[in-house]
Length: 129
Image (cartoon, rainbow, N blue to C red; front, side, top):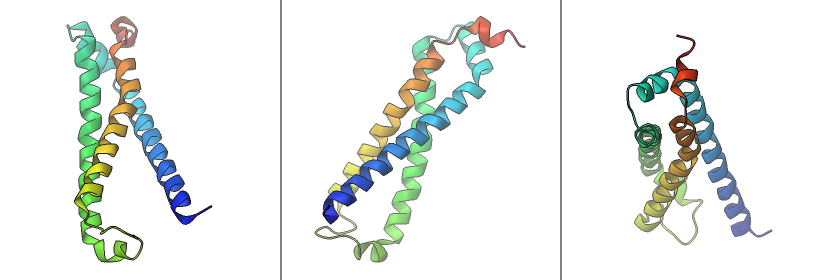
C-alpha cells in the first residue's frame, strides 16, 4: 500500500473515531439530562427545540475543540512541515476544508442523540421525580 493510501486510510479511521466519540458523549449527555429534557417537553418545548438544543450543544463543544486544534496546529507548523508533502502547513484551503468537514461530522454525529431527545416521553422521564 502506498504512503498516500495508508495516510488516507488513517485519516478516514480518525474521522470515524471522532464521529463515534462525539456520538457517545452526546448519547451520555442526553441520557443524563433525561429529566431536564422531560421537564422542558412537559412545559411546552417542541421536539424541534429540544433537538436544536442538543445539536447546538454539540456544535459548541466542537467549535471549542476545533479552536484548540487550530491554535495547536498553528503553533506546531514547523514540526508539521516535515510530514507534509506538496502543501504548506498553513494552506488556508486545506485548513478550511478540514474544519468544515469536522463540523459536518460533528453535526451528523449529533443527529441521533438529538432525535432521541426530541422523541422523549415526558411522563416516562418524570416518573422518578
